[in-house]
Image (cartoon, rainbow, N blue to C red; front, side):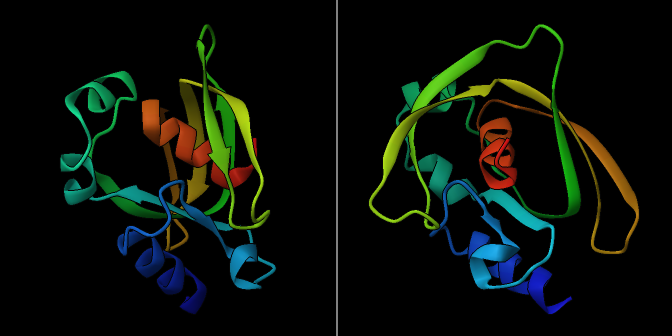
Length: 128
């Protein structure tokens, strides 16, 4: 879909470190995109790469995603902001491990466990 392409390209640009959702583009669809490039990860300190579990992945586009905390998963707290609420920043707690279920761009079911930064991105983007 055009919305999926727009989201994938926006995440690939590196301008959206916590991913994007279709409504941010004025589209009333349950589509999100997450990802982080190898270049973005390489620019981080070694401490940030380890403490935040930052690894290159995606961009990944997910349709109708559901996110569930993994049993026993700890929380991490970070300052976050969102393009949908400009100028507002808050400390937000997120599970460090979540189970994700969705459909891919071909409509096929996908499921995976997201950890660290990837877990934070998907929770932020889906607003869990």
